[in-house]
Image 1 (spheres, rainbow, N blue to C red):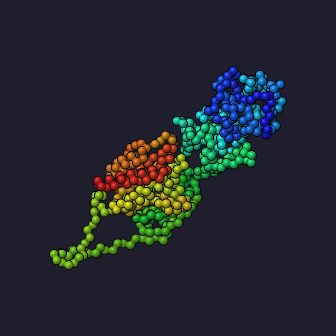
Image 2: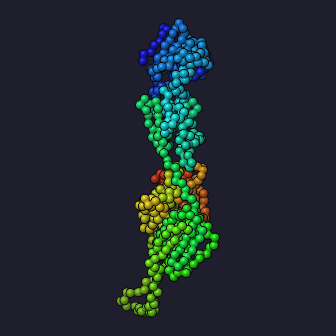
Length: 577
């Protein structure tokens, strides 16, 4: 579109806002002007009037595709944009938009043979977006963009610089389910326990409002954005998260009885169960899911009335599981049958243990004389002895949680992934040392299998691995969490006095490696350190709910540093014991 300027020697300028008039103006070349994403350098530099910035009118024509006419006789400026026409008269506070009168706070004036107009007023009357970024001294002008989230309009402002678009966060945040806090030059977007930090070099403050990149909004929601053909409408298609599954109704286990070879678990409503067997001694385990123990009398009716059953016991295994254990005298198969009143465990194919064979007569070992060539001598019974004198020290490394049990989740990280990564690195360190043998309770393959089956790794299975392998030391690796993002630090737990020195030695190295702050050593009756037979500790490396600590724990170099520190602590403990 061609520019039309009437009146010899007259240049037209626009106000950036609605300002009072002054007689003098001065050039201000440091101010940047962005129109429709392009940085514009006008021939006539920006002017300063009463601390307000002015720019030449031809930039509007070139950048926004508007037409500007000057009527010297009527002392009138006409700005046309498509079907819109704005008329402003020098000295008059009344503007006309398509013939309709609009009031202005400041009338257009002529200063030094140059005409100035209230720029922001023209922008608002024509429907264009106008913004001021004080940090870079930038004027931002662009065609308006409509913003939508999943097809629903959101009254946010969108600004453009080069090919980057920034949207005002105050209107966007509630539309995508986030709240915003600004602190220490950072913007924190929070949703439940998840949070995302945006540094000041990433966002902008335009007209005193926080404006964030569109790419950040897409990343935050996990969605994707799409433009219409004219780039006048931007639609964010947010990932639709299905509602959380309805939590099943809590079941009450009201009674447990034994009648011959049938064990009945009575419940107040239909129950979901999981069952498995264990050895040494042979046991059948039935876990009633999402259940609370409500047994009135602790004794079990009919207990020990069948020779195949040595004992029936039960407990509130965890907050959502009631566990019933049937200890067998021999071996047996079983059926688990749902009844209206609960569950029946029906034994079948029972095999009773055979009486032990009589012991062979005790004979004295032959007396060996010097020079006797006989080499067969009785093997001495090995003694545990100090760890430092052992040829191999067995260390069981437990990666906390596993399978469908994710552990704590926060800041785009999952506890079970972090504990597995650190545990595998620690096991590698131990195996590289001829003094140690490392046994993992969970590796990547086992975790994959558990996840595919939709089950978690039971705590009892971890303890069994340690006890059955005759481990010398046990360490369980965990990541902490809090309802507040302010929770931070490293801590180490032990259960019995025999584990205190072990805990102190490892904790000393661990705190130095994380640098997160020392939350000290503590005692606790965590299942895995209470039921293992060897010195056992549980470490909480840092808080996944703390954005800073979570970001560090996801780094491979941090994970290796922690593994190296724990290995050093274990090695020192073994050398001193």
